[in-house]
Image (cartoon, rainbow, N blue to C red; front, side, top):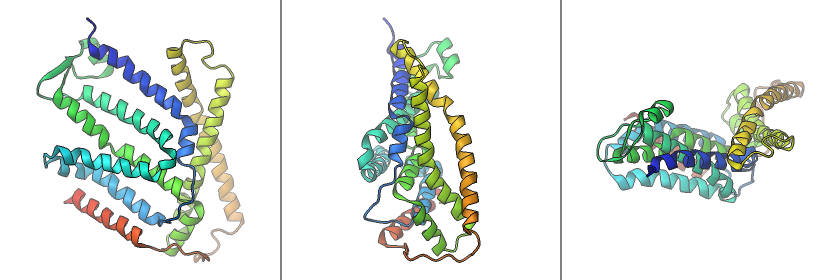
Length: 295
């Protein structure tokens, strides 16, 4: 009888590739598409909160883990994911593709790579373990560790919060918020270009990918093989688009300099963002996360 892990091995990778292709650059562009909100949050508060959460997930996770409270261990990431899905509730489909693919492949790799103690679930052959870098024995503690590792992955949440930041912030808000705090214009320009360029780059990547598919990439191939061709198509469009982004950023910098963007240190605006109750709440949570991380 064929062992279950030899069925799961291709299934996990094929499902992950399928979800990545279903998402595509168009799905990412849809996630980061700007939508005007009734409640305006200061971009500075968002940035500080993202940094605080990232530091907590890289350092403070072990504080929660030491409590040996399983409910708390699973409640925190699920609550955080629920909050992110609530903020981006109009883009749940694309967001689910991204989160599902990331959690699936991350948990699978960590489950099979972490050597744990306890009852054995299944055993890999030496050849499979050598090729994929897996541990030969997978135990229940490996399963528990892999699921927690994926749920607490800093990379997952820093990208998700990046999606939230870009989709809820426009260039004008960044410039106003940074100007009110007298942040140097050079730093303001970096964040402004970041907010503007990322969605545009993803749309260009999606267009390039569709053109590659229309030219016959993977045409006539069986479905499993065609998935790998489509994944290859997602990868080959990255370099040309980055070259385009570099040229576009240079043209944007020239246009800003021509219009006197750096001519005056003190810029004014008719609209003030300021800090409101929700901003102070995010800053308070950030302070708590920093305290837990370094205590």
